[in-house]
Amino acid sequence: MVGIILAGGCSTRAKVNKLLLEVDRKPLIRHTIDSIKNYVDEILVVTGRYNDELVPHLSDVKVIYNKDFSFGMFTSVLAGARSSKGDVLVLPGDITNVNNSTIEALLHGNKDIRIPSYEGKTGHPVYISKKYVELLCKESLDSKLCDFISKHNDVVEIIPVDDPFINFDIDTIEDYNKFIELQRKELTL
Image 1: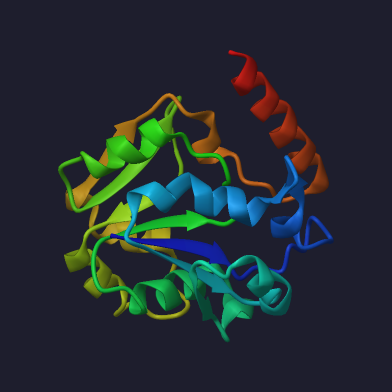
Image 2: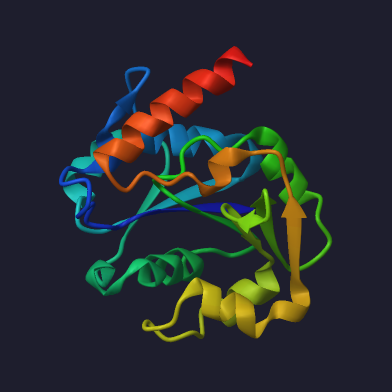
């Protein structure tokens, strides 16, 4: 199993490299890596715009530079998938605190594509079996992961989880502040 972490974006709305914002003295990208590292054999971090800034924080994972990052997130999905040999978990780098129980639920699912759902809304990470990773790799650069999933809806399993973090991506500094607040609430429960 390979964990593909998407870190190729430009952080346009945050106006800073959001993946290097810190929580508990650790960059967000490290929180994302830590959330899946115990469930995968290898982690691929797909970088782009901020490659040079991120690489010093990624010494323990394989880094794939996506030269096509400016064409959108799906190009990073493809770059990671094309570097993978088996089943994958795809997770955007700014979704940083997925619960262990969510990943375990995805790994124990039955279908070839598995997506977590919290309060009726789907999120990340997305599990894709090796067979469908091979099909994914044939998609064009201008496609989207949701389009690929829709084409293969018959093998998609939506797995309800009790995890608000599957939908909590950090696009702005305000989102970052909300994330810190939500994390504190989770720790006190």
